[in-house]
Amino acid sequence: MAQSLDDKRMRLRHAGACRACGAALEARVEAVYERSTRTVRCLACPSPARAGGFAEERSV
Image 1: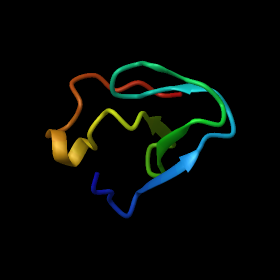
Image 2: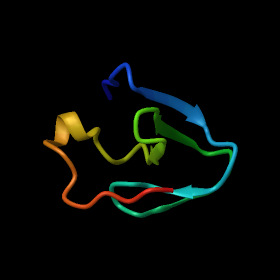
Image 3: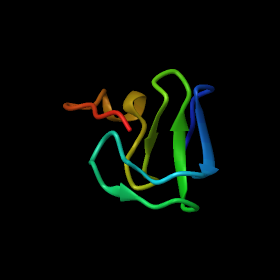
């Protein structure tokens, strides 16, 4: 998966939800943190740039 300079793949410190699909993300799982929106995305979801943008955005 290609990442933009805004994206950071990391182990989450806190639980959250994927902004693209809404999947629950437990603390200590690998996910992509998007710095500009301060949201997280699960590894299964493509980046907005690769997917042409998300239909519905959700914040954590």
